Image (tube, rainbow, N blue to C red; front, side, top):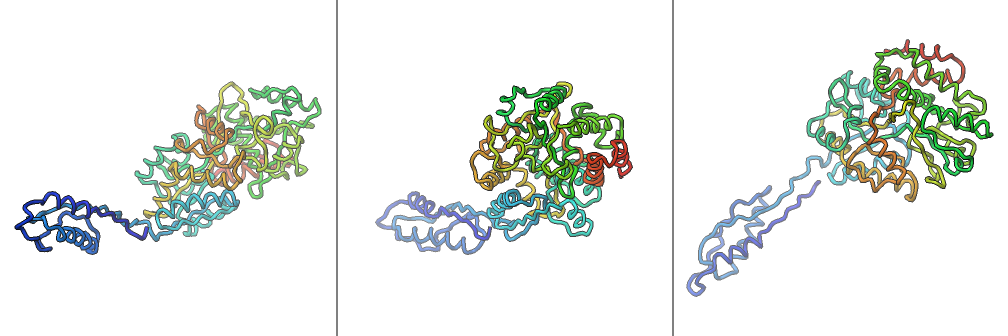
Length: 481
């Protein structure tokens, strides 16, 4: 902030001086200006001191009742010039759409304006590849927005990322739960702050279509398999499925693998699989891959907008679900714009469990810093506050035109204003915050060469039938660094 805000109560002090000094007005002449002594004035410049003295002196000399020299304390409140003023912080991340990148930048602009600084956000879909080159080349941004904790771990161990200072950690711990904070912890040191959450353990459906066909929402995996077959028998297509996503093609299949791993094998097995204590090609993992492919390859089970599962963009399944080309679509808490939600539109149910527990698979983004500077840590701390969460959500809502639409943003901040979210979004947050078992997307936790590499590509090969399950998982196992 370039200007100083100064509030001087000199006039009040002068009047108090006058009242205190009243005496015999007939004999005592007014004292000369130099007899007035103003002490204990908190100032930053001589200009302020002279101004205060002048104001007090002028009031005193115009009052003939003053008979003695007095000392007064004039409180002066001075707001120091903001040390962030004039600084610039660069932020780089994967959010590149007008809604996502624009809302992100707008939320940062508020903090920048409050502090007379500049914060520049740049979003690229190819973030994962570009950040590798930038970090290795010694030209990273000040702050990066990571969708993959595994990459955070890689960068931290390379010495590229900076541990978060204690004062920033305190703000993070005050606002974000331990389960989410753990995703930014590497070898006992906190390097990243969660800024966005996605809920993945969801199945989207149309309640009206279920009601018209007499279908009940399944509560177990066995129920879901039985419902799939019942829909086929009734001439309905149960699932919309697509895994195409440019250079990230295959990640949608990995979500199914991770959700079923939590359900079939539990959280402890999941953690050991993610950190490679359990081989990627273990019999348990092969069985889960086979379970998914058997479901997808059942005749009549899948509608693929692009002709095949691997050529159908994962985000293109919203329209066919709405139009009745399929009955169910497993996807995270983001959904295409222009969709009506609720009993008369599209709703969600929890991706059923196998054994009766309710594990939750999540994802999201975390911010980590490459440069040690006060302005960088100030922005990092802002990311951990409810103010960032609320500002981001307000702009997300505006970007979608307001109304009964989903913003596409969920905050992991426990102190965020839930009134800014639609009822459906509030139910997402309730699931995230109350789940007994929450695990981050496994591929995002693994070393990038696997989680953002062979896991995706070998999954695509298996879906296409180019490799058997055993061949695909063996290739992934061989690629583990």
